[in-house]
Length: 251
Ligand SMILES: O=C[C@H](O)COP(=O)(O)O
Image 1 (cartoon, rainbow, N blue to C red):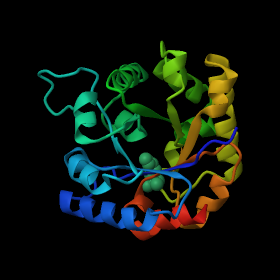
Image 2 (image 1 turned 60 degrees about the vertical axis):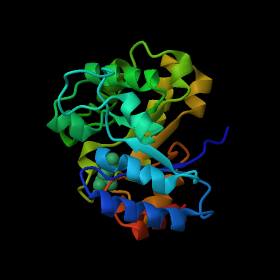
Image 3 (image 1 turned 30 degrees about the vertical axis):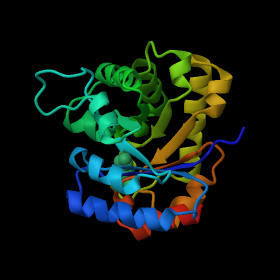
């Protein structure tokens, strides 16, 4: 079955509220009727609600960049799934490599966040991917298997039907080095086969697996035309509307 492509922009820790609103307005104008892909943006927490107001009435989706697994409480600096929902988000990134690397998130806490996302009615976008060293040691598949297996532990098949995965080789993030089309397709095929074995074939066939790592207008077409690549999770190139819209137009 045909999977709807998703073009997702992760704005990371970039842009003030005013700048986020401006970018959202430019994307809203530019994306209007220009793409068959689903479009999603993930601003900083403080810009979520203002961006939601800009995107109101469009089919552009809004995501949080992370969430905590408790609903509320004395957890300074954290945000819950229901708070993201209330701010206008329908999706949430979980387990981004920057969260794992700089904030010590583990597969176990990723699993708690995934469950909390479902609990709040959010669609999680689970990010997985190997480091350069792991790839050079031939451990890519083992790493992916572990991140997926532990991250998705005890997730019900019903919930899995709403899951989105993102393959983001750490060595390709923000480095300008993109995985080759073959490398991306091969990793995605491995992930899809894993999903089929862990859940079932239909879930695997329907699951979107996005590629992330230095995607830009010049390489988007090649990457996104791979049979196993169902969209892109874009960092740097999502921060300028002409680049983000350029990626949309390239597909
Ligand atoms: O979430 C997005 C990825 O980390 C990719 O970032 P990048 O496009 O800047 O390499």
